[in-house]
Length: 166
Image 1 (cartoon, rainbow, N blue to C red):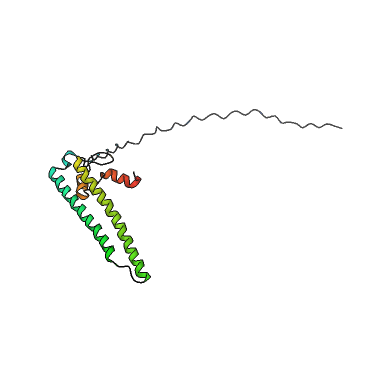
Image 2: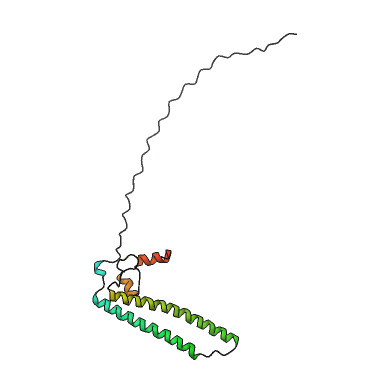
């Protein structure tokens, strides 16, 4: 038996390809910076010229007292309405009367809350703390006090309380 050997073809070693010079990148220019926006002007809760004068305080106190009398009168009138209205009739009439009473009760709840706020505002006037926010202790804006004399919070704290319920 004859052994056959395979002939291995030898090749000459290949030369490495010459390396290309790395291409230089153009320098990146930074974009021109925009000037920083000016900070929003900070509104102060109340400026010195916004503080209430004695005349304004007296006027507000009179308005609060008048509100108190009106609310108390409305609540009393509703109580008298309930007494005067007899509860007779068919079931539909009774259901309607029941709904009317429920609405009156809800209204009187709201009026009680307003009455409580009015009383608190009058007490604050006596103490000398009327017009100060109960949360941040800064002065409540004059516009807000004129619109809602029983306001307990400044606009910033009021909107915060409506969002978070503090």
